[in-house]
Length: 324
Image (cartoon, rainbow, N blue to C red; front, side, top):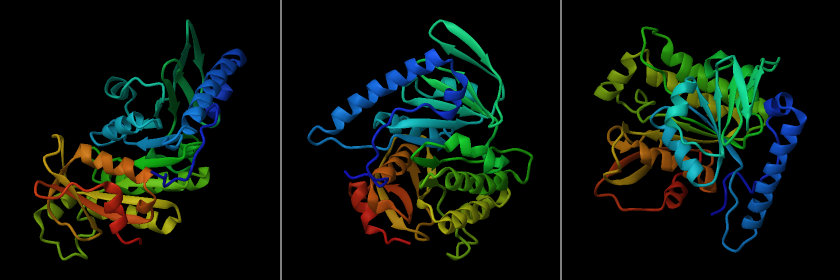
């Protein structure tokens, strides 16, 4: 399957934070291992029937119930993943230990471990700090999606795509939905533009445009907007992405369940579905497939699961949706 990101050849490089923070000998060791891995990847890519995949994907909201599944499925398909999280401890406990995974947190102190040595690191002017290097590389960044695009640039620099699966946490802050689901998403898009990242997948919700669909009295639309006009905030962020010029796919799932899939995926154009549910596992499948499927570019799709729906390839479903 051709990649929607284009053919991306794995290239050995150090993240800017690692290049600055590591001693020269350790940096050379890390780069040597990267070169060896890249050589193996290149050999594999040249074999018949092999596929070239994007090198690295940044996942925002990686410890959320949907984002965690996105990370797992990306790693299973051989992607490199930079997982953005506001809770490093939670990420350590919930995300898989994988050599292709790096964590980015908003904490501001760190310690580096390589083999048997420990090395404390202070934050530099770019706000990046190395947390741990070993089987998994952990990075800390003094920024989150609500703090402006400039602080996010280094977090996404060097990745090939971003999957945004963020969502505000319930609190007494009435502006929380706007800080995360609107301003946070907008900041992430702008950081991508500044860092040269050209592919963006947003996981959002059906009914975001419920008012235009005549669904103002839909109970789901009412309930979701009771919490700080959540759907309105998401819609404004979606509009920004569509105006940004970045190659986007916007995935609008129905009600999310934590259970295994009980039906097959139904995919419809924007502003079509106003009810239904879907497993988070299936939402993650759609988000990851969007990265691999050229037919997903510049499209808004709505998805639910139905027991009586035929089991169709996601690539065919994306191809059937009209491009915006």
